Length: 190
Image (cartoon, rainbow, N blue to C red):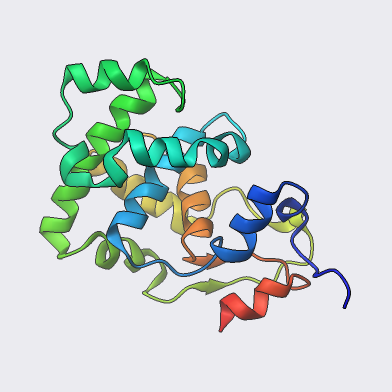
């Protein structure tokens, strides 16, 4: 049996292959997982995704399993400990944003019943099915990611620009951006 056809970015590094094959583009509805991806996408700003993937388990440990109720209570001492943690990206703005975003996340949960109910409204509750044949066709942002960014910012979130929001949408399956030639395209679509 021959090698599976994948999106070009999802090859080579075993971490990338596993992430591409098992997670990326799969519709996600678990609030804690959505919070994790929102924080990791923000942490990735200006860096490669492989940098974040290699530190993902460290992030899970450092951020208490991405429990937003715990992260929202982080104080100056915890933030100082995170800034000293070599297992994560030690960027003060990104760490502060994660704590700030946890508080905003809890507010959204209270207002909408779940973050899932809130975030999926930007695609009408149904994943957008794109049909790209080349990576260069995939946009960096869309009208939906711009609307999401604008609303998240209005609700007090940080590190949620339109490009970060689109990467989040791709990661959490709000859009299916697997190339049509990729073996995951039809699987994720189903």
